[in-house]
Image 1 (tube, rainbow, N blue to C red):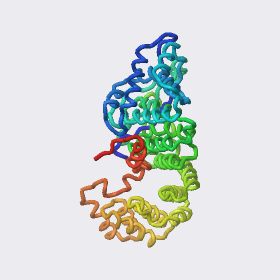
Image 2: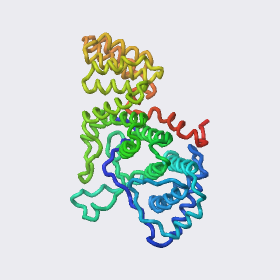
Image 3: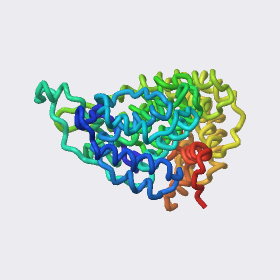
Image 4: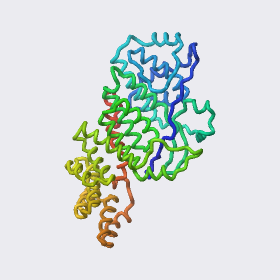
Length: 427
């Protein structure tokens, strides 16, 4: 089990906004003014005053400001196409105040403001180290009143570090803010490269931290908005492959949640592997040169028992220039060859992997297993001995990172995402 917290979605919906009906709300206007100033002042990637300001907002502040933020964006010339956070029309006096605050509509300026706002809400989560808001276990459905069943409820996730259920917590509303903001990009968010890159980078961040409770609703939105984006499809496929892994399948199988709650979005190993295969094939249709997608497709096919097909995909790749990806490639080739009874070829592949990372436990275990299959007990033990006496280090073996999926690319993706906006570059 990964040492990072494992988060799995159990209940999905969103809070409804609440503010005075039909009369001015000076507090909401004040929060809007602070929000606009923070967006304009923020340097993407910097833990600056704008991040500190918004990190101090609670859920009520965010929800109260949302319809006012929408009105501001609309006044700039964008069209808000929000998904689920619904609210009544603004009081007429407040709508007029917002029109006076904003200048004439300007589509290009509106898009820049929207993207900067989304990046600010992103940095609030990533840089301010917000503590999750823990909540009691949800009531069993049978014990809920009709009103409780009909209410819009927050995203509730179960957190389990190292595979042990620990607590329930609310999903972070800043992610919903950012997603709904980007839905206002004109002329169409689905054709804007920044929007696609943001969705991929955030999914990669969730994958890197094993935060599947946040990742799965994020990917749901991405599938609707960007159904054919190669990067988003790849990130989705890698997460599907992780959900098929033993660590997730065993966790969901043995973990009993309070009040009879069930995990959502986690299916059987077979179903997740089927989804991963379908997504990876779509990636390769869009970009046949996407080497990591082909390597992962090879593993998925091998996991599904299609070892010849797996080798055909892997053989279409020359040894990747990326050392970590090359290590994955050799290991996965070795597994497929071993499954087909080609022990000598499998040993060659495993040794090529070990040459790249001499302290890697996975390659040594694979070679030891082959030796044991040949009844070479002494050879099997000799291969394991260095791993038994060495002080383990995660950098020794890239396989520790395989199930982080696109998360291994997260730093590069965020650099690309922030670069056009005067981002702060770490020294």
